[in-house]
Length: 216
Length: 323
Image (tube, rainbow over all chains, first blue to last red; front, side):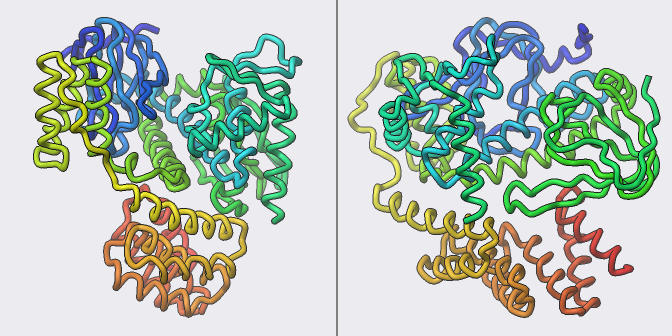
């Protein structure tokens, strides 16, 4: 449903390709609704720039600033020429009341974020590093579109560092655990992807570890 | 069309793990949402108020139900599909605003929980070094435009920060399109403090994990050890708070009160102050000192924001005390 946002024209900002809209770690008090162009969300982890997401027109980003003026957790960079509406906490209510569709969109975004964070939390509560790593793959597989759900093998376009980040362990530990899985033939590592041979095997493994942890 | 449905007492509206795109509003009767607290594993029961929506998050987010909705006494509710719900919400922004508030609180809380569990080193906890390093990174990878942005930002927020002079010289280099003299760039956070921090952090999270497994006696010993070993600092303060929680869960209410009284004197601005007060109030309640308990709950209401869980809990507790 196309929204009439002409009343918000005074909040419009434009960026040239490669412009940084906001930078990881800087304090944030604004959030954005993309009107045209794409925005890339990146994070620099261990001297490597990681793509987190690419956002399209109609999407919202920087929304955590509505909650608290915390440092930005990632950078937003214009991929194309970008036009966006910039809001802060003061004009947030005007926006929400004037355009409830955006409020609804934000509500849905929050439900997704809450779910993602809770899922992440579950990984971190595991004591065992192998279980943490296996659970990262389970988490990734839950949001992955699969052509053939009966197939046990899953391919993930991730690197060892990504796994470390999600599991909350060091890249070295992440590599050690993955190498152990490789030696057990449960995992194959390629430069651009990691293959899990049997995702159901990982599911059973994590489940039993979690149960064990609860009864300990 | 949304339809009214009647449920008998003891029936189930939906189970945890179900997927469904139904959103409910309670018209009459009693419904409880039962789930396990993600941090402690404790079984929780949240009573739905008449007129309150439930099942919204999982329906909108299209993920499995996280709680089981149990009917406690004969109840009537109206079930909406997601599109029906959206239509109503769009006509009544108050609903959305109210939910945004609730969800953003939940999000803030879970973010905090995740952050607490992540044993991030000093670097990531320190936005000042973080921002400077981003500038450094872009300069190194010869992306001058981005380097200029990050370094300018750094100097805006931290004009006399610990990297201020380095940042100005790097900024100059970035503006000239050169990488400058990168060898001068020092590394943040000395290694020694980094390892010390990890040891305390490890001990702390170990104790937290004992607590979450309800091994309160063991957890208590660990937390007390951290307090003793680490003089001052973040983990001492955190462990002080947890120590009180252990006493409470061990039914040592006198000790819980005594401990928190001491903690509040030592850390008058402790981040978990209000929660600590709640435990004190609750301890008095357990000791049958209703006046004191009510006093603490009232104090919490005057200190906490309305959207904080502790505010709601205190209000509930006061109501139970007949205040």
